[in-house]
Length: 481
Image (cartoon, rainbow, N blue to C red; front, side, top):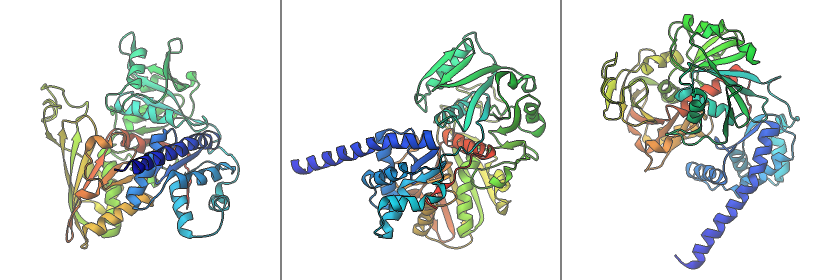
């Protein structure tokens, strides 16, 4: 490479880096002061670094097969900062592309003002007061939920994580639980600062006071004595999965609704956010968020069913091991799960295929399913072997799923990758319910095989948070329309 070309690449990088740096305070002000979440083709820019912003633009370019740079999106962002916007999600990538493709002579300030006229109405909170959140359990999912709620605190006028309910461990219980929130072997360090207030028996995370409450019986807790009222409680223990057991939470003062982070039993509504949100009715006091695998496959199955129809199929999930398994061979009440999880592939059952019917009744009786627990600590893969109701091609199916991931009601649930080198660890921290691996797609007439990656911890937790946001009335409109 010539020295001049080398210098050109470096200068271009430093120039884009400087532009991204200038975007950071604007993104922060829009979020904190207005409740505006800025994104680039679904990738949130809130609380991101300069490198994260540049990578988000790079992703959009690869998927769109179209150049998009911070040099083009920065003026859109600057135009937004001149408006008095209400809370919303605004995709500056899509706004930029729309501005470029319209080929109009309108200046950028006028264009952005016209596109966002419906929210250029002045600052206004979506909720009359912050909604209290309580975590019942503080394990893998509980701590990830805590991270997400803390990161999305914003100006403090939305959802506020107030407490985590656990069983008391050792005398230094508070210190140990704070340490587990601070460091995670899979998801890395907490983004921010964590302290403990021993007098209040609380963890202070980025200024959020999270009380640790000890109990073995849900109905015994009086949350109002901690200043908690009308709270949404998220039970991530999985100890109770039916209406009778989960109703014990509702007997506690200060709790008004309950969410279970597992498949529910009996008549409990199982919600896969983005697919059957109509079940999130105000009168439903107990809602379940189904399983991580159900959340990963249902959006993709719905998209495929809507466009091609599904005659029948089989779902096989290669699922990372969980705390339900043993580290080394030992007694377990379920078949095979007693064998050492980090050492073996373990065939086991999954209810995900049957659970699909609860969210997509049109697929009732059409799917079978099984699971293989594999020796990785996080990120799983669902293999959808489907017989469609009409023939298609790899190109048509992938193009359709790409478009769904970029611009559809399921764009926050379905992601798409066309990299020939991705492996499971690349999807740690994915905020999506599932990621379609397009280069692995197989099509033969009406037969197809789809490979869907999913972070069975973080992606699922993001789905739970989206559900809780709607339950609290915290629904962001999305622009451009």
